[in-house]
Length: 279
Image 1 (spheres, rainbow, N blue to C red):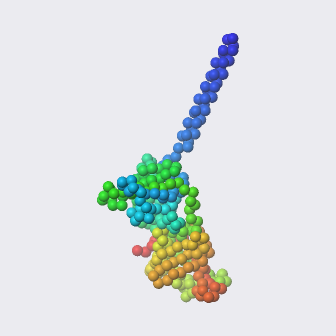
Image 2 (image 1 turned 135 degrees about the horizontal axis):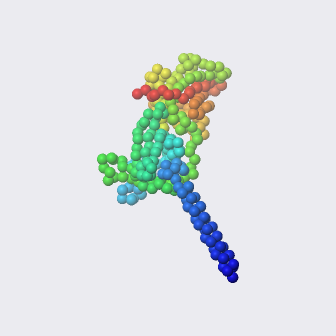
Image 3 (image 1 turned 135 degrees about the vertical axis):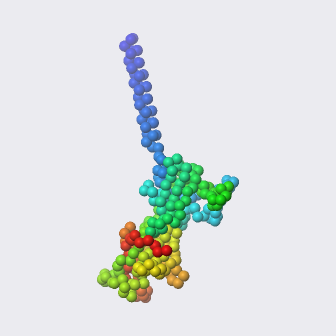
Protein backbone atom coordinates (compact mmCIF):
# COMPACT_ATOMS: atom_id res chain seq x y z
CA UNK A 1 0.00 0.00 0.00
CA UNK A 2 2.81 2.41 0.92
CA UNK A 3 4.50 1.67 -2.39
CA UNK A 4 1.26 2.39 -4.25
CA UNK A 5 0.86 5.72 -2.42
CA UNK A 6 4.43 6.67 -3.24
CA UNK A 7 3.87 5.93 -6.92
CA UNK A 8 0.71 8.06 -6.90
CA UNK A 9 2.56 10.98 -5.28
CA UNK A 10 5.37 10.72 -7.81
CA UNK A 11 2.92 10.64 -10.75
CA UNK A 12 1.13 13.73 -9.44
CA UNK A 13 4.42 15.55 -8.95
CA UNK A 14 5.48 14.76 -12.52
CA UNK A 15 2.18 16.02 -13.91
CA UNK A 16 2.45 19.27 -11.97
CA UNK A 17 6.06 19.70 -13.11
CA UNK A 18 5.07 19.18 -16.75
CA UNK A 19 2.27 21.70 -16.33
CA UNK A 20 4.64 24.34 -14.92
CA UNK A 21 7.15 23.77 -17.74
CA UNK A 22 4.39 24.19 -20.30
CA UNK A 23 3.33 27.51 -18.76
CA UNK A 24 6.92 28.73 -18.69
CA UNK A 25 7.43 27.88 -22.36
CA UNK A 26 4.20 29.67 -23.25
CA UNK A 27 5.26 32.79 -21.37
CA UNK A 28 8.57 32.81 -23.26
CA UNK A 29 6.71 32.67 -26.58
CA UNK A 30 4.59 35.67 -25.63
CA UNK A 31 7.68 37.66 -24.71
CA UNK A 32 9.47 36.74 -27.93
CA UNK A 33 6.36 37.59 -29.95
CA UNK A 34 6.12 41.18 -28.64
CA UNK A 35 7.06 43.95 -31.09
CA UNK A 36 8.21 47.52 -30.64
CA UNK A 37 5.98 50.29 -32.06
CA UNK A 38 8.39 50.70 -34.98
CA UNK A 39 8.24 46.99 -35.75
CA UNK A 40 4.43 47.07 -35.70
CA UNK A 41 4.28 50.01 -38.10
CA UNK A 42 6.72 48.41 -40.54
CA UNK A 43 5.10 44.97 -40.36
CA UNK A 44 2.44 45.64 -43.01
CA UNK A 45 1.28 48.11 -45.64
CA UNK A 46 -1.46 50.48 -44.45
CA UNK A 47 -4.51 51.80 -46.28
CA UNK A 48 -6.43 54.91 -45.25
CA UNK A 49 -9.97 53.70 -44.64
CA UNK A 50 -11.58 56.49 -42.64
CA UNK A 51 -11.35 59.90 -41.02
CA UNK A 52 -13.21 61.65 -38.20
CA UNK A 53 -13.47 65.24 -37.07
CA UNK A 54 -13.10 66.53 -33.50
CA UNK A 55 -16.74 65.62 -32.79
CA UNK A 56 -16.24 62.02 -33.90
CA UNK A 57 -18.18 62.52 -37.13
CA UNK A 58 -17.07 60.66 -40.26
CA UNK A 59 -15.29 62.82 -42.85
CA UNK A 60 -15.18 61.84 -46.52
CA UNK A 61 -11.67 60.88 -47.65
CA UNK A 62 -12.07 63.32 -50.54
CA UNK A 63 -12.66 66.23 -48.14
CA UNK A 64 -9.94 68.85 -48.61
CA UNK A 65 -9.15 68.79 -44.88
CA UNK A 66 -8.00 65.15 -44.98
CA UNK A 67 -7.44 64.26 -48.66
CA UNK A 68 -3.70 64.98 -48.43
CA UNK A 69 -3.30 62.18 -45.87
CA UNK A 70 -5.13 59.46 -47.80
CA UNK A 71 -3.44 56.56 -49.55
CA UNK A 72 -1.34 53.44 -49.19
CA UNK A 73 1.64 53.78 -46.85
CA UNK A 74 4.75 51.60 -46.76
CA UNK A 75 7.02 52.10 -43.73
CA UNK A 76 10.11 50.00 -44.34
CA UNK A 77 12.23 48.52 -41.58
CA UNK A 78 15.27 50.42 -42.89
CA UNK A 79 13.65 53.76 -41.95
CA UNK A 80 12.49 54.73 -45.44
CA UNK A 81 8.86 55.26 -46.38
CA UNK A 82 6.76 55.70 -49.50
CA UNK A 83 3.15 56.88 -49.65
CA UNK A 84 0.97 56.45 -52.73
CA UNK A 85 -2.51 57.76 -53.46
CA UNK A 86 -5.32 55.23 -53.64
CA UNK A 87 -4.72 55.45 -57.42
CA UNK A 88 -1.20 54.01 -56.87
CA UNK A 89 0.51 57.27 -57.85
CA UNK A 90 3.51 58.16 -55.68
CA UNK A 91 2.76 61.05 -53.33
CA UNK A 92 5.76 61.29 -50.99
CA UNK A 93 8.90 59.48 -49.89
CA UNK A 94 11.57 59.95 -47.26
CA UNK A 95 12.49 58.92 -43.71
CA UNK A 96 10.25 57.88 -40.81
CA UNK A 97 10.50 57.03 -37.12
CA UNK A 98 8.27 56.25 -34.13
CA UNK A 99 9.25 57.08 -30.55
CA UNK A 100 9.86 54.18 -28.15
CA UNK A 101 6.50 54.71 -26.42
CA UNK A 102 4.57 54.58 -29.70
CA UNK A 103 3.07 58.02 -29.12
CA UNK A 104 4.52 60.02 -32.02
CA UNK A 105 5.29 59.20 -35.64
CA UNK A 106 7.68 61.46 -37.52
CA UNK A 107 8.18 61.64 -41.28
CA UNK A 108 10.64 63.75 -43.25
CA UNK A 109 9.68 64.04 -46.90
CA UNK A 110 12.71 64.27 -49.16
CA UNK A 111 13.58 65.70 -52.54
CA UNK A 112 15.50 63.49 -55.01
CA UNK A 113 18.77 65.10 -53.89
CA UNK A 114 18.11 64.22 -50.23
CA UNK A 115 17.15 67.70 -49.05
CA UNK A 116 14.13 67.93 -46.76
CA UNK A 117 10.79 69.21 -48.05
CA UNK A 118 9.07 69.08 -44.67
CA UNK A 119 9.11 67.22 -41.36
CA UNK A 120 5.80 66.28 -39.75
CA UNK A 121 5.02 64.86 -36.31
CA UNK A 122 1.62 63.34 -35.60
CA UNK A 123 0.08 61.99 -32.41
CA UNK A 124 -0.55 58.24 -32.57
CA UNK A 125 -3.93 57.23 -31.12
CA UNK A 126 -3.98 53.55 -32.11
CA UNK A 127 -1.12 51.33 -33.27
CA UNK A 128 -1.54 47.58 -33.37
CA UNK A 129 -1.27 44.86 -35.98
CA UNK A 130 -4.63 45.79 -37.54
CA UNK A 131 -5.03 49.55 -37.09
CA UNK A 132 -2.90 52.69 -37.24
CA UNK A 133 -4.71 55.91 -36.39
CA UNK A 134 -3.11 59.31 -35.90
CA UNK A 135 -4.34 62.84 -35.24
CA UNK A 136 -3.60 65.86 -37.40
CA UNK A 137 -3.95 69.54 -36.49
CA UNK A 138 -4.31 71.55 -39.73
CA UNK A 139 -3.75 74.81 -37.86
CA UNK A 140 -1.03 74.61 -35.22
CA UNK A 141 -2.34 77.85 -33.71
CA UNK A 142 -5.72 76.23 -33.00
CA UNK A 143 -5.22 72.75 -31.47
CA UNK A 144 -8.96 72.47 -30.80
CA UNK A 145 -9.50 71.63 -34.47
CA UNK A 146 -8.23 68.23 -35.51
CA UNK A 147 -8.94 65.14 -37.60
CA UNK A 148 -8.20 61.51 -36.85
CA UNK A 149 -6.88 59.59 -39.86
CA UNK A 150 -7.63 55.87 -39.71
CA UNK A 151 -5.53 53.25 -41.49
CA UNK A 152 -6.05 49.52 -41.54
CA UNK A 153 -3.77 46.66 -42.40
CA UNK A 154 -3.82 45.79 -46.12
CA UNK A 155 -2.28 43.28 -48.48
CA UNK A 156 -2.03 45.88 -51.26
CA UNK A 157 1.34 45.46 -52.95
CA UNK A 158 3.53 48.53 -53.42
CA UNK A 159 3.51 49.64 -57.09
CA UNK A 160 6.54 48.17 -58.84
CA UNK A 161 6.54 50.35 -61.95
CA UNK A 162 9.63 52.35 -60.97
CA UNK A 163 8.11 55.53 -59.54
CA UNK A 164 9.99 55.29 -56.26
CA UNK A 165 13.28 54.58 -58.06
CA UNK A 166 12.93 57.56 -60.40
CA UNK A 167 12.08 59.88 -57.50
CA UNK A 168 14.84 58.71 -55.15
CA UNK A 169 17.86 60.36 -56.77
CA UNK A 170 18.93 63.06 -59.21
CA UNK A 171 19.81 61.76 -62.69
CA UNK A 172 22.64 62.98 -64.91
CA UNK A 173 22.77 62.35 -68.65
CA UNK A 174 26.02 60.49 -69.19
CA UNK A 175 25.67 58.95 -72.63
CA UNK A 176 23.67 58.43 -75.80
CA UNK A 177 23.59 55.77 -78.49
CA UNK A 178 22.09 55.65 -81.97
CA UNK A 179 20.05 52.83 -83.51
CA UNK A 180 23.25 50.92 -84.30
CA UNK A 181 24.49 51.10 -80.70
CA UNK A 182 27.17 53.61 -81.60
CA UNK A 183 28.03 56.35 -79.10
CA UNK A 184 26.66 59.80 -79.88
CA UNK A 185 28.30 62.92 -78.43
CA UNK A 186 26.03 64.69 -75.96
CA UNK A 187 26.62 67.94 -77.87
CA UNK A 188 25.20 66.38 -81.06
CA UNK A 189 22.07 68.25 -82.16
CA UNK A 190 20.11 64.98 -82.29
CA UNK A 191 20.38 64.44 -78.51
CA UNK A 192 21.55 67.75 -76.98
CA UNK A 193 18.00 68.76 -76.05
CA UNK A 194 17.73 65.76 -73.71
CA UNK A 195 20.97 66.30 -71.80
CA UNK A 196 21.13 67.58 -68.23
CA UNK A 197 20.29 66.95 -64.58
CA UNK A 198 16.77 65.65 -63.86
CA UNK A 199 14.83 65.82 -60.58
CA UNK A 200 11.63 63.77 -60.52
CA UNK A 201 9.91 64.60 -57.26
CA UNK A 202 7.61 62.28 -55.34
CA UNK A 203 4.76 64.79 -55.58
CA UNK A 204 4.60 64.32 -59.36
CA UNK A 205 6.49 67.44 -60.41
CA UNK A 206 9.87 67.62 -62.14
CA UNK A 207 12.61 70.07 -63.05
CA UNK A 208 15.35 69.48 -65.62
CA UNK A 209 18.48 71.62 -65.81
CA UNK A 210 21.23 71.71 -68.39
CA UNK A 211 24.65 70.50 -67.32
CA UNK A 212 25.38 74.22 -66.77
CA UNK A 213 22.63 74.29 -64.09
CA UNK A 214 20.30 76.47 -66.17
CA UNK A 215 16.65 75.44 -65.92
CA UNK A 216 15.51 73.81 -69.15
CA UNK A 217 11.99 72.53 -68.39
CA UNK A 218 9.56 71.84 -65.57
CA UNK A 219 6.10 70.37 -65.16
CA UNK A 220 4.59 67.06 -64.13
CA UNK A 221 5.74 63.48 -64.70
CA UNK A 222 4.29 60.00 -64.54
CA UNK A 223 5.17 56.40 -65.34
CA UNK A 224 2.69 54.00 -66.94
CA UNK A 225 1.34 51.24 -64.67
CA UNK A 226 3.44 48.65 -66.52
CA UNK A 227 6.61 50.74 -66.07
CA UNK A 228 7.32 50.89 -69.79
CA UNK A 229 6.68 54.57 -70.56
CA UNK A 230 7.52 57.88 -68.89
CA UNK A 231 5.45 60.95 -69.63
CA UNK A 232 6.40 64.60 -69.14
CA UNK A 233 3.81 67.38 -69.32
CA UNK A 234 4.87 71.03 -69.47
CA UNK A 235 3.05 74.20 -70.57
CA UNK A 236 4.63 73.86 -74.01
CA UNK A 237 4.85 70.12 -74.72
CA UNK A 238 3.90 66.59 -73.71
CA UNK A 239 6.56 63.94 -74.24
CA UNK A 240 6.20 60.16 -73.90
CA UNK A 241 9.31 57.98 -74.11
CA UNK A 242 9.95 54.24 -73.89
CA UNK A 243 11.83 53.19 -70.74
CA UNK A 244 14.60 50.69 -71.54
CA UNK A 245 16.37 50.54 -68.14
CA UNK A 246 15.27 51.83 -64.75
CA UNK A 247 17.10 50.62 -61.67
CA UNK A 248 18.92 52.13 -58.68
CA UNK A 249 21.87 53.30 -60.80
CA UNK A 250 20.69 53.68 -64.41
CA UNK A 251 17.77 55.29 -66.22
CA UNK A 252 17.74 54.91 -70.01
CA UNK A 253 14.92 55.86 -72.36
CA UNK A 254 14.47 55.86 -76.12
CA UNK A 255 13.53 58.89 -78.21
CA UNK A 256 12.15 58.74 -81.73
CA UNK A 257 12.62 62.20 -83.30
CA UNK A 258 10.24 61.40 -86.17
CA UNK A 259 7.22 59.37 -85.04
CA UNK A 260 6.52 58.44 -88.66
CA UNK A 261 9.93 56.78 -88.87
CA UNK A 262 10.32 54.62 -85.72
CA UNK A 263 13.39 52.87 -87.13
CA UNK A 264 15.40 56.02 -86.37
CA UNK A 265 15.95 56.45 -82.64
CA UNK A 266 18.42 57.38 -79.90
CA UNK A 267 18.83 55.92 -76.44
CA UNK A 268 19.51 58.54 -73.75
CA UNK A 269 21.46 57.17 -70.78
CA UNK A 270 21.28 58.69 -67.29
CA UNK A 271 23.12 57.59 -64.17
CA UNK A 272 22.50 58.26 -60.49
CA UNK A 273 24.07 61.55 -59.42
CA UNK A 274 24.85 63.41 -56.20
CA UNK A 275 24.24 66.80 -57.81
CA UNK A 276 22.05 69.11 -55.71
CA UNK A 277 19.11 70.73 -57.42
CA UNK A 278 19.92 74.36 -58.33
CA UNK A 279 17.73 76.88 -56.49
